Amino acid sequence: MTYQPMTMAVLADRLAREADVKVRWKHVWEFFEEFRWAPVEEQPSLLADEPSLTGDRQWDVLLAAMAEHLTARLDLAPPSWSRDRVLATPWFPSSLPSKRMEALVSAPAAFRKHGIYLSARDLEAA
Image 1: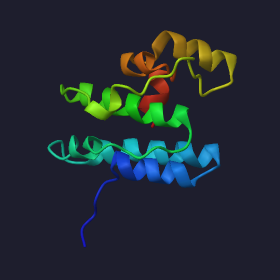
Image 2 (image 1 turned 120 degrees about the horizontal axis):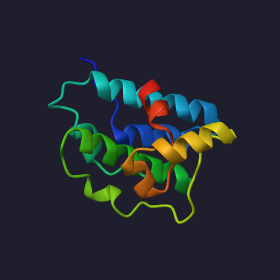
Image 3 (image 1 turned 135 degrees about the vertical axis):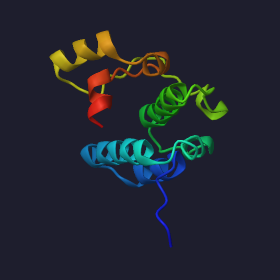
């Protein structure tokens, strides 16, 4: 049995089963790390399959923003499933005023497009 990096669909399943927000974020950061270490030719396949809904609109849209952000870094079009997942009201995952301000200034375009404000530094730390 060989190691297989986490797919976006697997991440969605983990988020759907987890109520603890801190653990949810750990799964997200784990996905970013596994994606980073996956061979470049395999990375698009980790994002291709539409993930099932998690039961929380904000997290569903976060997955879309992540997929769009990562495919842009690969110079690819975003997966078709990600296009319609957009929040009507912006979501700032951090409640700290300083982090919210930083996110307003530095959130990557894909995240802003979907209505999610995470700072670029938070994504780099992932």
